[in-house]
Amino acid sequence: MNKPTAAPTTPMSPISVLLVDDHNLFRSGIRSLLQRHADFTVVGEAADGVEGVKRARQLQPDVILLDLNMPGISGLETLQLLLQDHPDAAVILLTVSEDAEDLAAALQAGARGYLIKNIDTDFLVRAIRRAAAGEPVIAEAMTAKLVAQWQGGNVAQAKVLPSELDVLTPREKETLVCLARGESNKNIARSLNVAESTVKIHVQNILKKLNLSSRVQAAVFAVEHGIAAGSADK
Image 1 (spheres, helix red, strand yellow):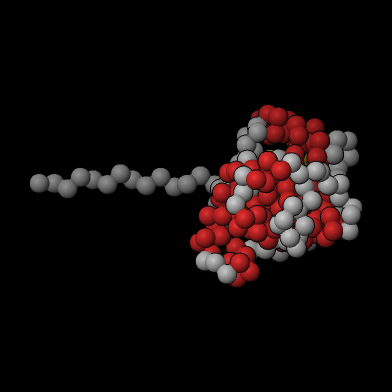
Image 2 (tube, one colour):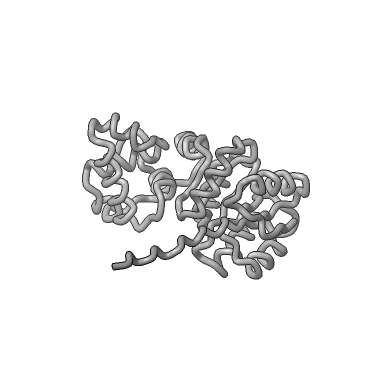
């Protein structure tokens, strides 16, 4: 009896990337970097937000790398227009701005990531792959900056309705405080003296109960709602 022939494997399509930045030299550098990897293809470029939105509609890229400060419409305005057309688009802000308010605004507008232009090239490549897979990506120092700015009283805090946090268990509230500090699951597990797998479950529950899509959004939620980094008793 003949064995069934295995179906041929289909190679995965490369991750298509659109570059939206007003600096030609920077776009050229990113394009050259990505072209060295077989799993990327740069399908288009744009020097401003209007052209970026137009090119995104035409090309339907997997990932859009978007500058924050551009002539004409800003990166945030461009982000909003991009997500109006494609709410699930993987847009990463790639900027020189390390301002916590810019980070918060980008995440609230729906960006999947926020990276600083001086990051390591290997980190950028990994971040684009993660964003294409649906994961949020953020420069490591930025969540800490957001928390520090809140602690200094520079970020407006919203009043927390009791019902918003009452849905969380005491341990989930403690986990949320740790997220606001920008801690990894490993560090949270150490702080709370629980297994790392337990922390993952707490994080999943927090996201589900608060209707959030990422741990970054959970950190922003905690900061904006005045949840002190040192206490969960709010």
